[in-house]
Image (cartoon, rainbow, N blue to C red; front, side, top):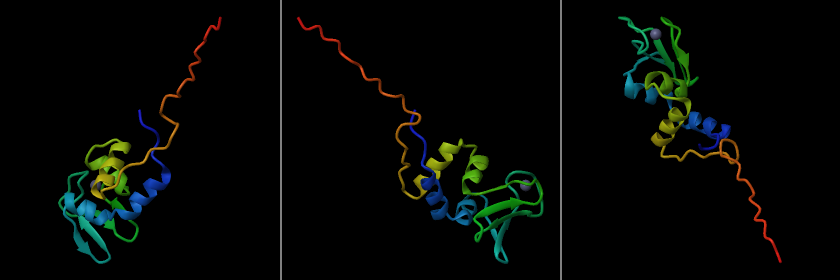
Length: 118
Ligand SMILES: [Zn+2]
């Protein structure tokens, strides 16, 4: 199992991902003033109550209460695990996901060869 994804990388990913482009590619957003709207992908509705803010890099649905950032959108919409959502966003930006050393990896045991010197 690989190590933990560094927090700074997740921040950078969110920084470099535009949530409007990300959701627009999947749902198809319409500009509404400063924000973007669509019919919510997480519940059935006829009038759009799903709003995406480019300023806040956040989505919110007034109908079902779904909300979050680019990572939670990927998790909810593409049904991904947290780590897979990170990998997916990173691949869209052509980035490699770095892993922290140590945690997750089995500690290497120092094997001592006992040599019997005669
Ligand atoms: Zn909704």
